[in-house]
Image (cartoon, rainbow, N blue to C red; front, side, top):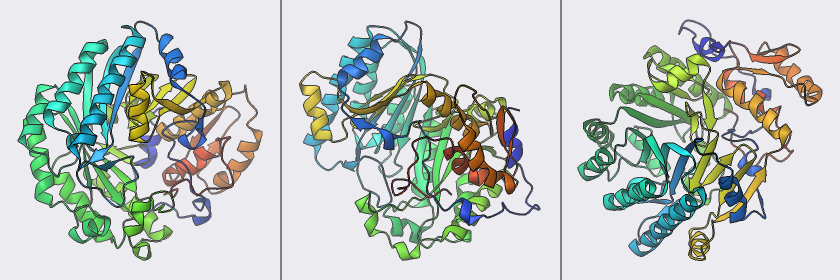
Length: 456
């Protein structure tokens, strides 16, 4: 049954659109890049909580690294990332000095244990720093960790990406990049504070290919203020013409009570729930028409791409980078707000860059929040992840899921799921409801939903 999700999504353009049941999508839900989600993190954790976890990493354990650069040369109004303006070199340099010290601290605690097979640079915009500073970060990782021919990936802001940065990526053997594109419609770019002509995107893509990168992803969005079906289709078609290997198509989450910069966006121009639903379905069908393989509920990849192959084989995973083929159970986050994942705990670094630097200066690992995952968390997390990645999950007998199964009945009545004694399976029309169905198994869900984004 590993192919359930892919088969469920492969509808022809002649078939009717996904059925729209607004009452099933009315409650905002998490994106489940972890379980428990970051909303359940609590204060009271410190660097020793991370140190203890690092002490138990075995010599040959596969480990992934994530480095957070919380700065951008320009701040986009829609963005919910932990980032600030890279307009003061002193502040940026001080942050990078602290990040280098954190690399040394974590590396010393690992003492050679663990095999680093993936390294991801995100933000913010990693290319907001100088190329030579990126060189220094890679050199520090090489010196303080045991690297096992890792796959290096970088998030890129096409604005300000030039040949110097392309050469830097080539020199450091980066093979994957993700470009923040969002939309190619100029009026929509102006509406969300991210103006970047299509030629800027095209040139960045060409530079990346010239630097030897073999996997390029575009991040796109639907549900933007004033966005029409035609806007979305034109962006999809123009993006595909630039030959990315992967695309992620996210629904814009308008939560100005949590992200003050979003107050600059005209909320009255946002598509309603029905229009958002149609746009999600339109993007899905258009990319299938272009030959892409659907991966999970919002990623797409060309056949033969590692992500597409993972989806087909049932090996797809989900972590803080979204859908991934990365099988590592341990992910170490470095930098302000970065999150580390271990089988028994999730730990987050201090979010504020100033306080992050203070902790590093004191010689401490900068953790300040987290959650311990007990046995039930792990079982529920597996159910949620398998539903989102393969469309099918075994129901563990070690915990009582009778209340959850009862809540699934309303989805079953609509022909969206099938439940047997020992498994639950998403049916062909269930994709836009996948997160909502998965959320049924989240024991931390509360009546207050203001922290989460729209279910579609």
